[in-house]
View 1 (tube, rainbow, N blue to C red):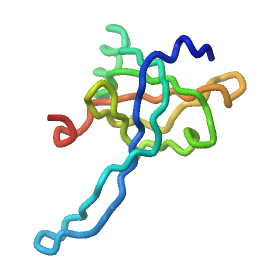
View 2 (view 1 turned 90 degrees about the horizontal axis):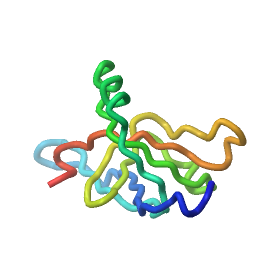
View 3 (view 1 turned 180 degrees about the horizontal axis):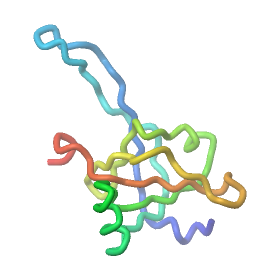
View 4 (view 1 turned 180 degrees about the vertical axis):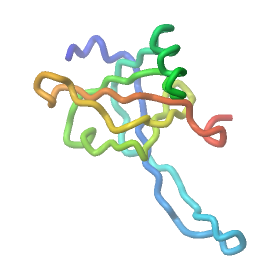
Length: 117
């Protein structure tokens, strides 16, 4: 993977449960940064967006990042901060088809309304 393709800076965050609200019983959580990495972020094409809507998916973009010991820990329970917005990771990262150790592709879906102002 060429470094020149990795033009965008994204932050991967994980959710940590910090306690429970004594009044409502709702879990209180906080997002913390796992890593900030270089990525190639591409919006879905019109054809891909139509196909995604057909299966009721909210995927908006894909982020390709280098494979590493840290990035292989990424799961669908995490989120991505990019360009001032938060995106949900839709499904677990997909490894490259050849070596499976060169890059990972993250499907980025619309984040929860509470995440974005």
